[in-house]
Length: 307
Image 1 (spheres, rainbow, N blue to C red):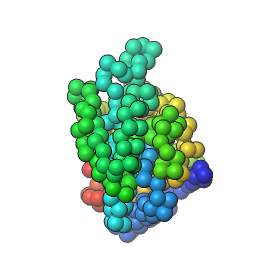
Image 2: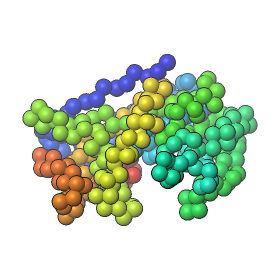
Image 3: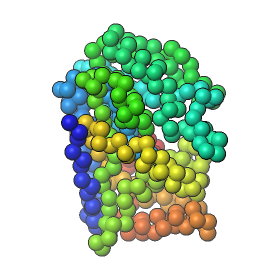
């Protein structure tokens, strides 16, 4: 039975700013709420006893870290669990599907070697152990039989943007497959107007991560965002109804910490279209309080973007 989607919460910034005055107690509360949601997901997985967990979510939703948090919860409950990325099943570079302009279409589900994925997962179900490939992004080639995955009667968590695509799900036994969609469900308002939707929060998460880990300017991330969102609408969000569980990856205190990081981005707010978009986002934060980055717990899911 498809999951019932959790309605988005529109929270007034004054409530967030007031809660932020308590600093660590507010942060602990938000972290506890997220961890509780992951724990509830792990508990449901064990109760359903379906051993293949397919987990997806849009860009910067925190799906990768959430997959590993879920694995840790399952292990703490006495179950074996492993995480694998769908990226490891990418086809070799000469076999990628192509866009109309001839460029490689990395976001197309046919970029994944679906028969190999089916073979590995079914073998894992039958034997409790199987050899999985690993993708070398430097050479854009897949290394066969690179990783041994052993779960016995445990769980394999497969995370990636296409995890809920029917072309993939239909290859797997339905009574052994549990589908999870991870996404933000909290937005923010000021004086009765929505000023920070989830899509902008994810853009800011990705902008910070791309700048920190990939050396991208905020303008570059913003210039790519439209095509990223179009890809999400085509390949990810459309399959949200296939989820058995919808996992909220929002943190109410996040925008306070985000504000402290974004102060370093003011120099990029130039007269380019991307710079103007950045300036609009930064202006929203004039009404948001801030917490120094040092307040962020080292084991927080948000570390995927900020630490």
